[in-house]
Image 1 (cartoon, rainbow, N blue to C red):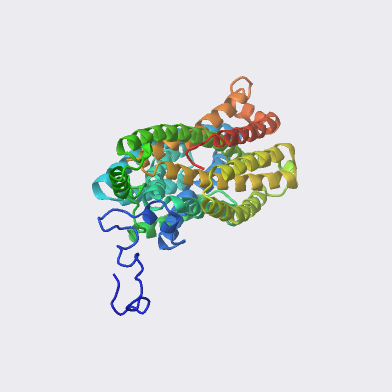
Image 2: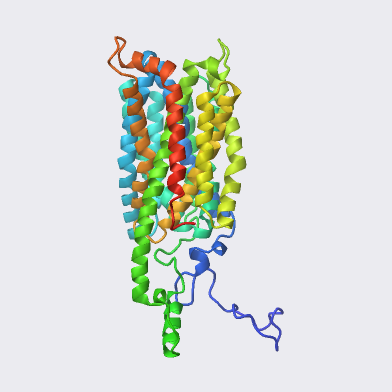
Length: 488
């Protein structure tokens, strides 16, 4: 409201028409303003809300990244050394099936809770407590059956927390800021990778300590978001196209004055246009989902088996006999994380500044594919550099993917549930890839059984075709994203 003694507007001078308007995000009629709903001006920089959200996502990623890439494979090597690869495949498969179904159910639960209570706080809190308990169980059990049951429980608990956390990007951040927020939040993934490297370097032997330490860090990371609530203002669903009343008045005025009225400005025609646009958005969402699935297939193969490859063939990575693979792996994760930190935020800023999603997504997918070609064909430093470059391309791609999907779902009445279906592209690769590896091993066809067959396959024949197929998946993903039309 303009103050009569405001020196910026002395008597006799024209008053700025913006003076006296309602605060940003709230119109005089009670609706949401454009800046709060989708314009770039709705994002005021990485404030407290982004920091709290990013810390919570770091905790969510930290809960599974060291577990699935180091702690669980290392525990399985300790309790079933002769069948480590086969047991890892089966345990990861059971967990992935649980995650696929659990994320959809958790999304529906969080959508229902938000409709009734206006937020997703309680599902996140319950999932956090259960996730910490599951990590503690996995740290203490030393039986294969106990590890399998523990991972199933862990995946169910994690997705109860993860699904509503992912939906907060739709609920609380404007379209013009989504790529930057997603980039900052997806720094949580490489930062969680630092947890993997730290666990490998500081705690290089199997035991309950790293599991319990990760559980504690997860709790400390997610709790501030729950305590300081609301952490950020909510974006009003269904109001992503502001000024509808103004447009209606303009149409009426044009009709009265006898001017031609565009068909798209007539409410009935606008509805028809919206339905057509909704169909196109559905097609694009499906294409983005398939592209994500392909990229994640390459990621699952790389992340699930790379440590085992180093263990089985250390000379190819430059590890001399008698030296620990864990130390090299920890250093590689650290270098990969630093590379990701240098890349991911500038990519997100460029995407928001230029309002472009497709071009950087295509570029990141191609970079990831070429990096996997280097891993497939190289050895020594070339192999390790390819792994680090793949990590950078993967994380940048996934951050842009998250921003794009959140932008498409901004008006959807059930974004949490839809994100659950989209999450199938993250979890199905964890089902398909282990099955393919098991089938490629010819399990049961050799006297040594599944473990011996898979060990021989991993050691001899799966390295080259596996990474070649992963690279091809990334290239196909780039081609699919290039076909998207509803997002620039």
